[in-house]
Image (cartoon, rainbow, N blue to C red):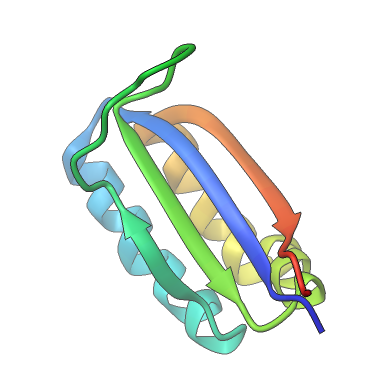
Length: 97
């Protein structure tokens, strides 16, 4: 079964509020088996335009990735994130050869 991934690209406007978002997302991420693969490391934009912060999170399955996003506890965290940052988030199924 292919894994699921969240790929987020954001600009953080308020670091203190964003820290509250990170605290709030810990519970749903643990519940759905999230694993950070990329968390705002050094990046170079070679083509197109990107926001300052890129995050890639792996889930055991695509269904887990979607269920985490749709969970009540993540929706509460998302409300905090939307105060502190703006950007994009996609949920994508991984490639399983």
